[in-house]
Image (cartoon, rainbow over all chains, first blue to last red; front, side, top):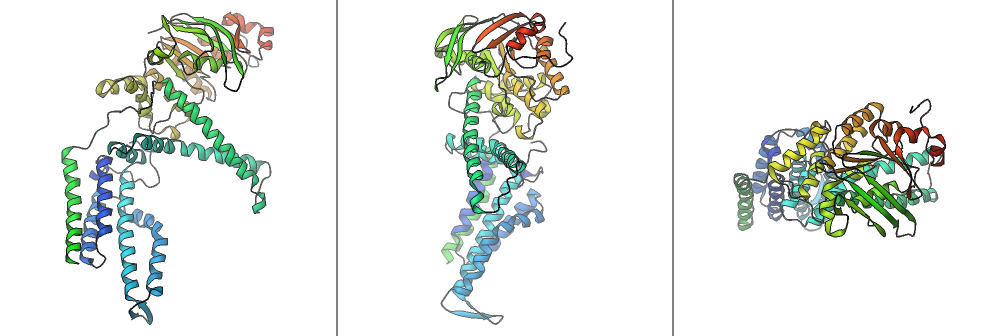
Length: 254
Length: 243
């Protein structure tokens, strides 16, 4: 993939994880998140193990920690909510720093925080090492319905175009003195949204004509991309197995 | 490599009742490069969409060599007639240029090395090998037009229909495109408002107005006829003389 091709979540590198086929990464990401989601919150050792493995994956991917940390700020709403739980939850309490906190609430907060952190890190790692079109392709390989894959592909391709059309319409409004400050002035925005919808619909018809003109009969052709090898699937399978074993152990101990 | 196009008395009405083609008659000889001129709304693009079966005529017939443009032959017609759309953003719908160029040949059943070779050839023909991995929305207007041309060249068509090839291009981009088109051996129909481009590339031109061909002949002679041009809302650029 060439430079200038990347979305904001992508880190241009040539690591082993970057080179893995997208379908293998998608399966691994779903496996890791699902395993940690079912791990009992009391099994702190299990989360420590997940953390170590995830840390290794981040190191192999060469995604900068600072990049990861900044993207993890997206979890702030969950963190805020989690921090409130010990204060408002009932049951047995413990006093920390002069504040009376619910023990059950503290466990609840920990549960949300650690699972959000693992889920967030796995997602960011997937996005940082895989271009969005590649992820969509991976979904196609994983037999996600072709219609969904096609819609997602076109959405990504044309989102930017629709956004720039919206930008031009707003510019045209501003250039003719439109400067909305009150809710009653929003009518032109609603009208432009309608107009944008019609324009997008018409573009859809033209794109469809362009596809038909090149022999499209309703099914996207396979473009012969490299599929994941047996060794790559084995590696991903082993990684998921380690997590599943940790999760199963944690569940059986609790 | 090139085919004869015969359009005979084609009539077409849009679903909203607008009569777009009122009886078009046109023949393009194998290997000929023909310019199609005319005002906006004359039916030029509508006719282009008939040539590979996107629209179907209400009356009349179209043949590509001996092949009738009818539903049973659409897949072969679409291999033989390549259409480059006016807005390259409509033409380039895949995530990267390389995949877009591969889309047509893949629909024809090409896979593996054959497909890769076809894509590489098409991109080389438009000097666009370096565009293969780039997403269309990151290209300049000229690059996008070249990529759009490559998507059609990859089908190895016998007839190339190009709607407004030079629209929106800077002079250097326009010149590159002219060079590329003049190197292509297939039959070409260039729909354009760019009269100097028509003169440079096409020995013969036709003028369409109100849904039919109203004039045709040697391009230079047509462009020298000021009255004919004015009657069809055409005008030579200031200071340009076709003589």
